[in-house]
Length: 343
Image 1 (cartoon, one colour):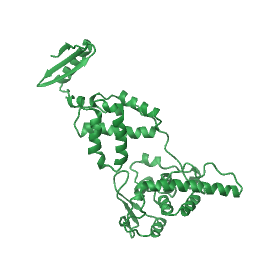
Image 2 (cartoon, rainbow, N blue to C red):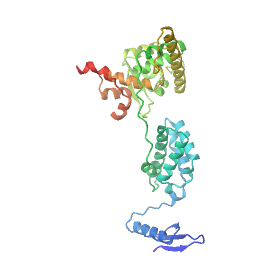
Image 3 (tube, one colour):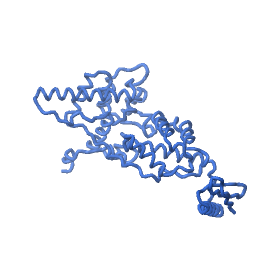
Image 4 (spheres, helix red, strand yellow):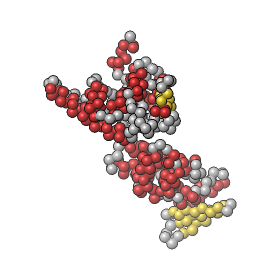
């Protein structure tokens, strides 16, 4: 039987002793304490009771630190994830114990992020990490808790980018790359041929290239699984034009350096385009060489593979997408380019 006793603070404590285990909870009213006691006793009798003592005593902050130290180092995106975990540790939600974190607490954190100006996509990526912390605590650490992130209404992310190269953009872009110098020109051309991600391109080594089989091994990918990328003749020609480096890397640049160089090249290409329009004279297209990111080259290359007639399975083999839904997000076909195939 449960013992209900008043506390000096005016609250009521419910205490249950059963099979050497003692659990207790404090409530504002005696009725609440009795209701909780009945629920716990019923769970014990039906064999459904779970000892939440450890989860009640462990703040979320401790779980975040343990996850950061044990799980994050095994991930490719450990630097980015560590940064997100630091933000979570600074949030008020980190002070709540694991057993008491509710979906309302997660919703309050989302509201704070919204007020700080974070985009829905950024918020959802952070929630994915927090959700995995709870799942790890449940599955790997054996804590009898629920995952409140699963029951939280997330902000709706905007539609995926559908940016494709406009007519003439590729020529202006490659010309600006040539003027800029360094490996950015061949890298851009190679990305358009292979649909490879920025990080995959940056980590390429000569030993990964099977020239005879015309295949490139990408040992480190976003999905965590290696894949073999078939190389078209133009992709091989681009590689043949590169000087062999002593360190074994094909390009000798970091992923962030590619992003920075690409942004400068796009800006220079736009300036050149506007100068040409002034000379023509012609009114410059406001869309030309605007809002163009390196990852958009992957969109463009993937779409071109479909336009060449490859089926989804063939394209996924090249691009490394695991599901058709993921592949669809990166594929935006121009209706006018499909007219001839319809007959």
